[in-house]
Amino acid sequence: MIRRLIAIIRVDFFLEFAYPLSLLFFIVLPLVFTAAVGAGLGGLGGDAATPEEYRTRIYIIDHDQGPLVDNLVDALKAANLDPVMVEHMPEDSFGLEIPAGFSQNLLSSGTASVRLHTLPTVTASQAVEQYVQGAISRLGGAALVAEMGLVQAREAGIVTDEAEAQAFFNEILSDTLAASQDPAVVSVVQWAGKGEADPSPRDTPTSAEQASAGQIVTWVQITLLGAAEVLVSERLGGTMRRLLVTPARRATILGGKLLARLILGLVQMGILFIGGALLFGVAWGQDPLALLVVSLAFALAMIGLGMFLATLVKTSGQANSVVIGLAMGLAALGGAWYPLEITPPLYQQVVQVLPSTWAMRAYTDLLVRQASLMEVLPAVGVLLLFAVVFIVLGVLRFRRYEQ
Image (cartoon, rainbow, N blue to C red; front, side):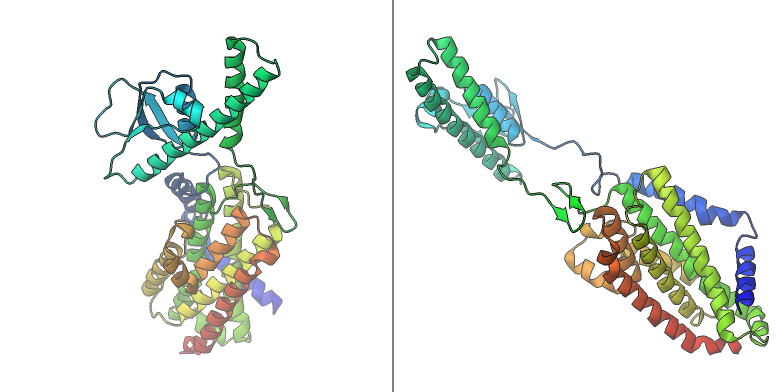
């Protein structure tokens, strides 16, 4: 039986690569599409290169010319604003007028008034108002701390003249503002058995990771679902009927055909994994066993679906159309072309009925969250359930090949 299986697999491999053009669809195009899709998705996910931070511009007119205006500008910058000093307020823009006496009032009471120009029709108006209020509050609190420190320094004889007093005040004010800019407590995420992780873990894959995983799912689905084309062609050409009348058991013949296609899909996966790592810097090697188990479960589900499809279509043309259309549809709906994390929650729930969704979820967990084998076992279990259902349905309908 083993000898017959090997013979069937060898023949199917020879037929698959009988023409050099086959390598174009098997290796070259998947890698080209990975590069193209990765470039198109750049910045959509959690790319390592941090995009330039967007800041809302606010124009400032200074009527105070006091010592705390520069500190207010720095506080506005720390509050995600882009302050620009002007003499005349531009129209249709966010603006801030600092009145005379601003610094004196802030130093004496810790509070001061400013005039803020907002744009009611712009959604960012509320955020800008909060940023300005927060910056002034921080500056007022820091000014009071610096003023109290200066009083104590004078009483202790640390400062003796105005120059020293001004330098001492500015130093305390700067230190207090710097201390209030960052949170006092920073959470650190720790994954089980893996030590400390990045304080800001990613929720979505980078563009390269999304493209690599997504194109693997897309193209390997075409290869594995191609089992339907092979079985239909051999049935219509009479090859399957001749094989069934040989001493070889039906299970051996069908198993050999499906095993050949399964190995073909796994080989393609391996090439694309290596290509993704070498050409696009995708780190697939964190848990090789988990990657292998996920890939095998996904391949079995697709082989089972391909076998079931072969019992539903009647011609080779139908088989080809169904394979391409279904592979592309499953890939698009299952998150192979874009991160599912950016879709509405209801959509994410609906597509749980697709094997491609579970394959992408498992690959994303491996890439983004550095998941272990135990952590991806639920997705593997669902993929194996798909495989069992499709294979059982295909076997029950396989007798039609004898007709």
